Image (cartoon, rainbow, N blue to C red; front, side):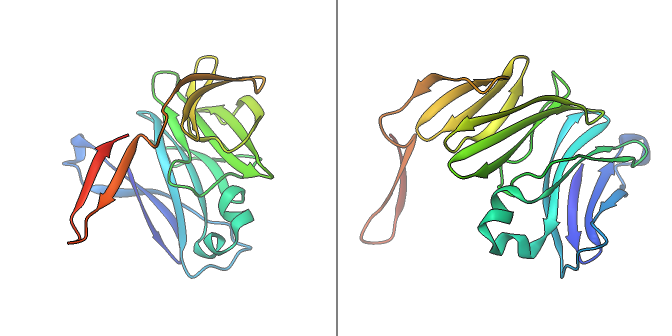
Length: 190
């Protein structure tokens, strides 16, 4: 599965071995009431038959509130193109959404006022958990009892009631980037 964006919408494409891996468009996600020069979005695969998607007009990236929590959300059946639009919005950040194929779930995040809303859904689009955690939580991966995510220099577990527990931490950034005077770049473990 992959996606391609244009002014018609965010196209989700699949390629199947039984069809010699020829790409075909499963669906095109858009919101008809919104004009857009192009649509953008992110997706992940929940299982062999379902994808979770965030999508929005490209101009949403120019407004912080829309970028951090205004994108539309959907679950797409990759077999027949059925789209289940979800009743909440999420971030357009590169890490959103995230999927766990073992639990057939996806986690969506939205950042507002120093808090992060974390919504986990199943392949039918049913909400499994909807919590708010303090601070900026990113890269939230759904688990059986909440999410595992990044919070600054910490790896945290956020349960389904929003309680956050530190799992691990670094003293510095996990990797430090150094640029020498001659322009060479090195990546060092923090």
